[in-house]
Image (cartoon, rainbow, N blue to C red):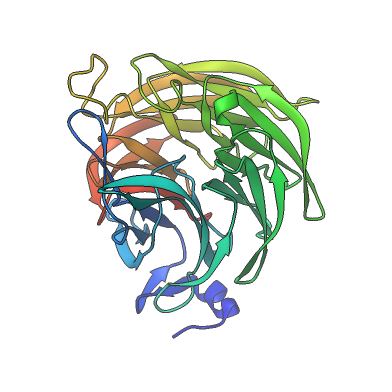
Length: 388
């Protein structure tokens, strides 16, 4: 078995479940088995114990292969970015947003406060640490240097700062944010971060210097209920998925807000109209395309006027600072996460209700559904792609 990081780098492989797998590209997926939806669009809860994190080899994106399956609690509650892969591919971090507990004869959801660290180099991949964060840790991000992570704590209205050294991850600070925060993302140079204040319809700006994270107390008004956000790899723009009616479909169109990060100070420069309830969001490595994943009423009552069996992924073109809508592509029921492969040639979209991923091919600005679906052993609530 290969054990040294240097050997891994030279060989270009990692070892998972006794199988040699290309170190990249690969994807981690969080499956939540505690929350289902009935025909009336109401959530039906189950006791914990069946959630999982799966690691998917994407050496051939048209034929993904599951190489590891770890029993680990995670949640659909929150944006589908509650996990991340370290830039080196050595570890993954998973935030556990909510728990399901007994409430008399019924079950109810309550905020959790756990962050799990997975060693991706061990054989098999395994949990090596559990960290206590604020209440309801949700969207998270690791900087490009691989030295810091930020976790948005929704119920705690704070951001947890994590230091990373090798496989050692420690909580070093908590930043009060004043409002509920659902997602947080570093800028590529690691000197700033942005956090969505979903209920306040704002994006907060943070400064980072020598590992110290500071909330600038400057917020940008964006669209209604910005639940998720991404920063373009070239660092020029940030996009927010403005989810609309308190994070749920209601039959109305919603928006993706465009933030110019090169302006001093940064500012919102546009709103692009997209279908009902965008949540998943991804920008390709070339910073030329984005994908907004729209629930489109697919988890609502079948009697609702805005119900659709399938959700959509909206493809957006990025030209400098101009973002325009190209097309909507039908995917599966209650789509959540979206991930471009590191070469930008494929886009994978996780369909929670269908327990699979739609595989889309990207050729320049043309994105098409290959018609292929990849089954996962559960309901994919979140997903993240390796950097290479």
